[in-house]
Length: 140
Image (cartoon, rainbow, N blue to C red):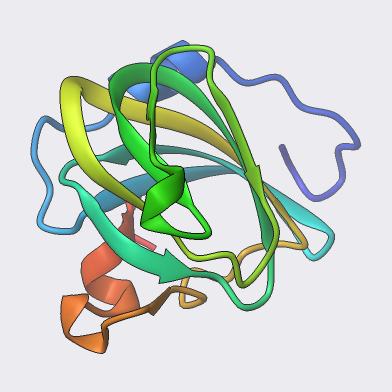
């Protein structure tokens, strides 16, 4: 979607299939829209994700493909996810994806307001940095 356009059309299946089979970060993402009020992304998860949270944005995740486990707020709230699952949580909610059963795991994400790529805070700082957590598949 260009800055002058007020609408957009995206082939989420094609975007999901464009991700490589391997990555050095836990996730790779592709922004479809990127405005201060909200961002929309497709991202692929390559390995289980440790507990983390976002200080500045709420997250809405729709599972396009893959299966695993996901928890929000605390590990006691763990459950399985698969295609069609919709996960919603507010900023500062700790969440994690401890297991991947079937890949590729691909999500459609809607972040409100826009999620800065550096807005990733690990419960255990030794688990990583924003750069080791997520990279943009297009190199920015």
